[in-house]
Length: 451
Ligand code: C2E
Ligand code: MG
Image: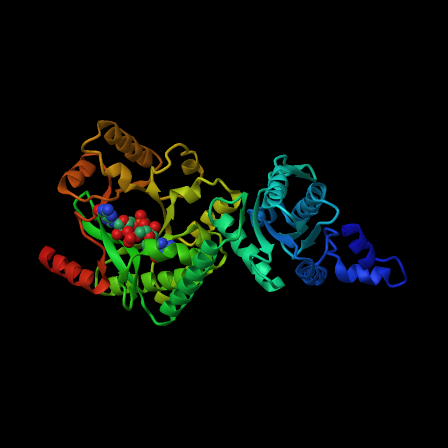
């Protein structure tokens, strides 16, 4: 069937070449979007008439941007060409391959009698990439996220079928990648919930419903509180105060995290200015998520806010989750050096959650580690954990970093952190996160007392 279709479309006559240009993706010699649309529309009409089913399969390369960024576009293009070759090897003649641009491909499997035949094809596609792709001597492990929709069960129009396959593919992307999944109603509901959450978050940012709370870090050498961590909250009408665990993940998925992050940077810098103007030189740390870190705007946003409020960059600290640093990417290392070049401080957040690999610490420009509260929590009852934390603190000091004990909830943990020579303690025992104005009053009281 495919060969008939192909012959029709690329028929060798005096307009053959033009047809080819109009219908083919020039890089991979698969069909382009226009050709695929025509094909699917025909297939819908025919399948409806003949009461047949067919499958639409969306494929997206995992981390393709990283391949392009780190190895260059020429190698990236080579990977896409090899993908098309491997897809063709797996498919039947009657199946179609199209490239939608970027790293997205669509396969159409005609006349499906049993669902397991579709699963088998999806599995074979994944198996076809068990061996790395080699381009210009570079060996690249390609992984794919695959989403499937079926005509007519999941949609009776091209748009509905593509939308359903896209949702199924995104579900795979969000749940570990490198796999395949079929569209179903639950995914549809999840998608609708996500869409309405995305809208609510966007509106909340416009309506000024976000607020930064600040949690003090207590210096254990007796200086007291001169540093705070900014923690975002959402004053959501009808829901009360919503914590970041409920919405950051949505903001990351939708990309709103960039605008939200820009807002956090601006607010935190503004607050540093207010602290300084009131005579309390207080450093503020902000949390930076992986998505933000991979974006070029971050550096520009920081620079802009530091200048706007005229603050010393060392008063701003960026907390970066350890899991992000464990990825060992040269781009990330460069990004951290660039950020460090602004003069801000960099901290490893949640340190020790994955203590299997700490080699990254010696070559990244880090100033501080914040030992995760899961480890601090039981230093009083678990001698082995206490030793581990003690070793981590010593390690931090050897590498010239200051060390914060996180999740200090009771006086015993506070005293023990001090005994283990942590530099700072953060947690409910010292203080909960508070609104900036409440904290200011406390700071000023403290300063008056000290005077
Ligand atoms: P994190 O950076 O590890 O922040 C510490 C979290 O622990 C905060 O939760 C804080 O309220 C909580 N905490 C502090 N002391 C204690 C304690 O003694 N015991 C216990 N059980 N918890 C304590 P929160 O505010 O809900 O924030 C959760 C996470 O959300 C943060 O974890 C951070 O990763 C993320 N986050 C917060 N604000 C932002 C932001 O502005 N941008 C981004 N990208 N992420 C943020
Ligand atoms: Mg943090």
